[in-house]
Amino acid sequence: MIYRIKNRLPCCGNLTLGSFLNIGILSRVFYGGFVEEIIFRWGIMSLILWLLQLILGQLNIISVIIAIGISSLLFALAHLPSIKVVSEEPKTSMYVYTIFGNVWVGIFTGWAFFEAGIFSAIIVHMLFHILWYPIQKMRTYK
Image 1: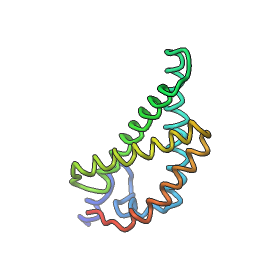
Image 2: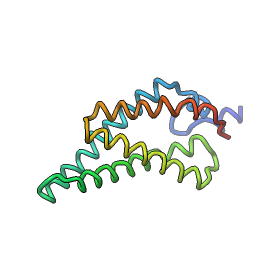
Image 3: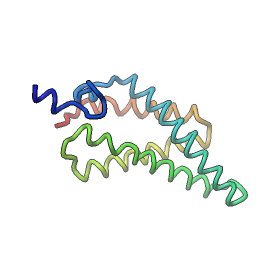
Image 4: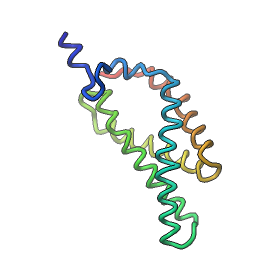
């Protein structure tokens, strides 16, 4: 009984750490692909581009790079709470790895969004999850 109580996630009712790690690939692909891209690329990146265009009077490559950078950093920071779900005592390297990896995903999806629109960013994000899922399933979290 103590094991069951200790391994419950405080924010999620009956969801346990084990059930979090067993979230299927379809949930990850569709949630990450659609929801995160709508929030971070279509929402935040577009807002930053719009604000920079208002401030600078025109849209240029520097504005795009700034918007991609800021939205990618925010995207990476949004993934930090998930570290506490997979490890009771996370190491500094886990935080660095999470930020670095998600910034790269944000850069690629941000550039895809700028070049070809929201659907290309969604596809890039989905492909990332499809490629990353087998690697993550091989790991064991304690």
